[in-house]
Image 1 (cartoon, rainbow, N blue to C red):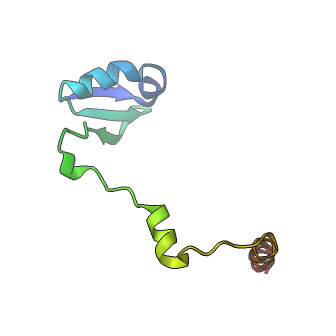
Image 2 (cartoon, rainbow, N blue to C red; image 1 turned 30 degrees about the vertical axis):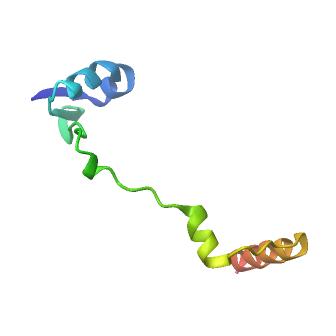
Length: 85
């Protein structure tokens, strides 16, 4: 177990990155008080989250539809109107 400060995270993250690559667990302190534990992600490919396929989702929802500039302007106006309350 290694210990680092918030300042170390900001100014010398490369040193901490080497520790993580070596499998170390780093306890982060701020003003002498522990605030976090930093561990390496690991090499497990199953643990990496799957990114959503937004293009496929858009095709499912809208198909091959193409909006005209007037439709886009109308939708944007409706969104802004809803924000103003």
